[in-house]
Image (tube, rainbow, N blue to C red; front, side):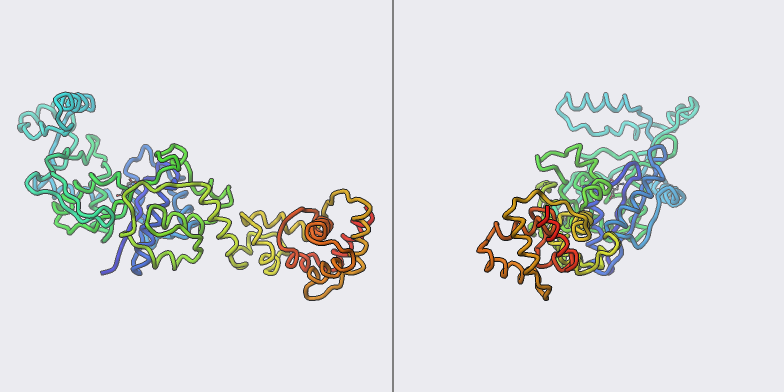
Length: 443
Ligand code: GLU
């Protein structure tokens, strides 16, 4: 059977790192099986959904390389929900209720005061036709609840959490439709999962109790439920669901110079028993993806870990992958020479300016200036000009170690440290290298 997964964000804001992680895992699950990863825009909340967020979600997935093979929008599927709802009405699985938010709140408080779970008491099930007629006559429209079946315990084998067991009587019958006819998330999601042929629902553990109710909705609609997996939530390093994490999205990662590969490498394994490693090869991450390795404890997101991973990933990126983001004229040899020194691809421009010049050098003393004059005389442009120059200078001047290398680096690059000079000097080129030594000797 092919695997079909979906990522189902509500376009009421930008994706944050927790959403990105869910999207990635759904993508990986499908990818691993040669299946399909779909995007479902959960935009039934017309007041809070915005088109710019839909565009943002698509752009973020594209940047991450998680492009879906298909896209559906809940706002375009209302007729489907209506038809399924009519079936549930006909089979008596949805019922009308009228309690206001305040009344429900009071009921909850009373239940809690008596030491009972705050579950909806199903008072609306006792309403007669006359009661409904009276509500209608006074202009009050009902909202609708899904009637859970209390007879059967709800069970599923969660791919992350293992065997799950819920007593339906311990759950409130979920409201599925508001008095104005609009839909809440629960039922449309099930109808879509059936219609889109979703085989695996992988989402955060905040949805576990929704799953219990939704499993009964699948059955009530005559469908076999998909497999479910609920992953532990992502938290900040301090162990809490931080506000900052909730606002950390692709834009801020891009601004920090984070590569999508680094974010993917981190989020693919964070919270699993597999080590987080700077793996830029996505196929390797995909082939090792295993829900069985996911832990139950919250996954801790650490910016410092992401930055470390990012540097290690940047060092591996091939020239072709970054060419479009490099300054004009910077070729593969230059990238290979410079990239081991970079934490971010954008910093390549800074090192390229060192190669092309002009550079600013520190003030040198007389002895060092004579040393540069000697360097100019000894510079012999071979296949390894730096190796040749330093060994000749060592012999001629007796300098070694830092007193040999540091002033030369300063004269040739204007910096105290940086990429390996064996690789950098050929990029600077003979003419420019000579000119820099002459200038440093004359300062
Ligand atoms: N729109 C829902 C959410 O963002 C989708 C949950 C689901 O994956 O079913 O929480």
